[in-house]
Length: 201
Image (cartoon, rainbow, N blue to C red; front, top):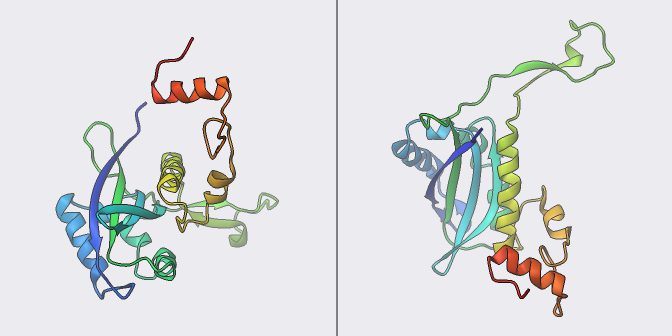
């Protein structure tokens, strides 16, 4: 079964001296909802980028199961970390909204359900053993993981903590984080296959 995400943006996030301007995110959500009704309440993955000359450079990848607007407030830690990284200028936001396969309707946040967090309890009336949580959508988490890896290829200074060490620490000869200057025939064949080039045999 196909899983669909629709891409929106980039929406410009104005900043002054690295800090978000007052009301700038409200304006972002207004523009997002003008592009797709209810987009601010959609769920999915987002990328925050900044301009490096005329090139957009990714700086943070995140996900939201609670709605983009609920997740991305002025207090979101990514904005302060990007500021500390001395990234200049305005930021740009891409939204990857999960949509239905037939009509392209936005998925909404799932309602919270009480789940057992302490499996040793027998009495389900014990509120300490239960917690209200939203069921996570695996496709959103997987897309976030893939985008972190892809954005790290563009910017090794990506400010994500989660998954960054895995992507940067995983070394696969001929494929990932491999700086072999004298590749073997095997490695050369692998690289040709991945690039869609003719092999020499």
